[in-house]
Image (cartoon, one colour):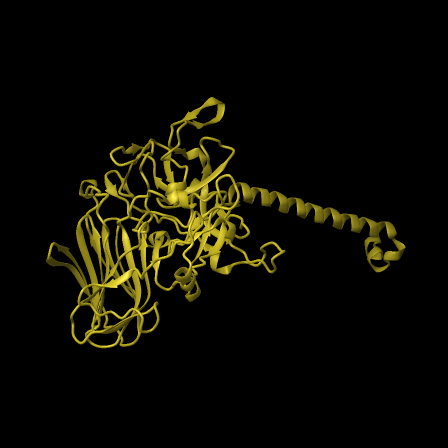
Amino acid sequence: MMDEERAILFPEAYPHRRRSQTLEGLVNTLEWMLIALILAFVFRAFVMEAFRIPTGSMAETLRGQHFHLRCLNCGYPFDLGPRGEGGWPAGNCPNCDTEVPAESVVTISNGDRILVAKCLYQFIEPNRWDVVVFKNPLNPQENYIKRLIGRPGEQVEIVDGDIYIDGRIARKPPKVQEELWMPVYENDYQPSEGALRRETADRPRGRNAMRRRQRAPFENLEGSQWNLAAEGPTVFSLAGQDETIHVLQYNPPSGKDFRTVYGYNEAYLNQGMPRCSDLMVRATAFFHDSKSMIGAELKKEGIIYRGFVRRDGTMEIGRMEGSEYQMIDDYQSAAIREGWPVSFEFSVVDREVILTVGRHRLRYDLGRGRELAGKVNPDEQSLVRILGSGTMTLRHIGVFRDLYYIDDHVMRAGEGNPFTLGADEYFVCGDNSPNSLDARLWAVEGQGNNGHKYRMGVVPRDYMMGKAFFVYWSNAFRPAANLPPMIPNLSEIGFIVGGTPGSN
């Protein structure tokens, strides 16, 4: 019998052999731990890395440190960024414009935590509308996160809040557009009875006064018979006897007239913002007879566009100039079942008119050329109307605006001042356009190695780190008031929507 076999059968007779096996196992464990550590470093350096969003420049898509609030007036949930120098800010509800006093702000939440694919751009070109992480050209020790707007060799110009590339409008892919709709008004969130009683009894004054709507923003035009209260204020109903069209008009309160305001920003940052004319109306409709019809009207550059769907599934887009109506496109979808919910959306965005009913979508191109973009009239009021006929009910009514890239007082790429990118240069902007220090505003040259300088307003290819693609931790819940947030908020976890190959 060999010594090794005896050591296995009679370990007490060979203690030195037992110690040797123990040491060998420990060495093997340490080797595996070292290999795992090396692989983790390699994975972090070249494949994927976790980041925490540092600021609010990408809100509402991604948030830095923020206060998670619920409006004391209408109950709308929203996030409010911290004051610039730290501390409690004062903000406004993005739905009803109620002022949130600084004293009412709760415990601050940390920024969203995301995963970044670091090696992706080593093999493929970044897509327009990707959310990208890169080294700050002004201070390469810092990492920034923005949305990619311009790619090498392209000419970028911002006109009326839209992006034009080489003289043609750059339309957002549908999933990106859905992510970037900003709330103007959602009818599901109504002032509480207690809030209304308090306002009637004692309207507060002063800096921290809670400003509330004095009336419902939707109103019947003359001769229209929408019932706005039969089933509560969140449900609109119509009991028309024929195909006569009844019209509701959205009359926004003063200061809330489609301005490019952000609930995330402090109230003073929302003052004097331009109006956004790219709008969308959304509702869930229930048709109750053969005459039922749901539609909407939106105004863009002085022209009123109309989109509607009838009970038999006829979808139509038209336009009105003065009193003349012209049908410009139509589509026959499946008939809509009586009493069943159907989603309705009508928008004019990125110079395209879009009517969406359930899974069916009808689009009409208004032209992509820069020369077709009408001159913006700052005094022109936007128009939002809801149309209906027959017997029907509407729920979940909402008005939304598009993301608006601000070009006032920027250093480059503003209207009339297009900016051309060179080879290996990218142009980036934050989704929180009024509160984002990005390529529009960088005022010094980028810093490179050995004293090399990069052109102002660009991200060099060498500084592109990767694509942000997943939020793995956001707005976690606290199990108790004295404990840190540790329960995952599954509704906030998910993929970050970016561009697609060939995004225009």
